[in-house]
Image (tube, rainbow, N blue to C red):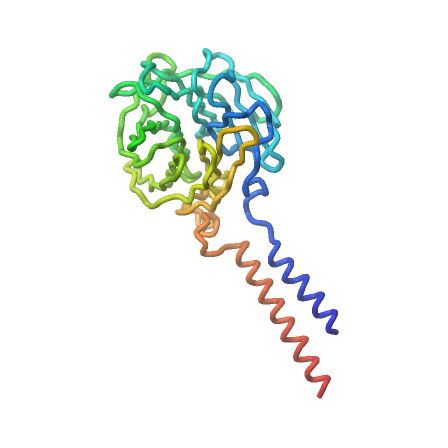
Length: 326
């Protein structure tokens, strides 16, 4: 009986402690193993392919983006952008409504040497294979003069594009036009201050949170219809050259990337309810557990329930043994 009880309790407790999380295995972090990707400067979770993250090199690479499988760290597709010029300094990638990928060729290391920069837009491929995809190229100018930037985000509901410039003492959130135009320049205007030397940013899947990271820290903002309000600091991991950030597809994690060969992408629980609109309540906020706020949810509830069953089993078998001894 003692052995049977120990075995049963062990199985129950082991099952309780090994329940898979809602996020895929890759959303716990991974290492980019492609030797071609040595300057990963942007990161975006795929909308069509679970566990896939899109990235790109900083400069001197060409018109390429890479689909990396977070479960293995290996590149499963290389997409060549056609219909555009030669990229100069690609710093960001984001996915907007309609599964449209936006690539930000917005870097300017001389902080104002180029009077305009570019954004490229292309549909996310439905099949992951090496291929060439035609992209649309947009010219971007800032209303108050040229500048350096490494952060581009597309709001998941409105499709509006935003850029955050990179200033050591803090920059600004720049808002683009309601719809980008492929003819003529798209003027981006400052709409809010950002208290960070920003290297990348990301919207939560529900569009209610804006996460901004730098080399040594990060800030979480409540989107508030574009009138951003600072909510707190992000627990940014210490990385060699922290360049990128994205939410996991379900909004439960923030994924932090870095430049360098065999660069690690590290995961942290996403605070503030950054989940998608697929919550049972239908209020677009996602469950508190899915948002990583530590209040528990389906997975945690199952663990607690399983532990409770194990404890109950222990009490039941203990009581039977006591009665038999009497």
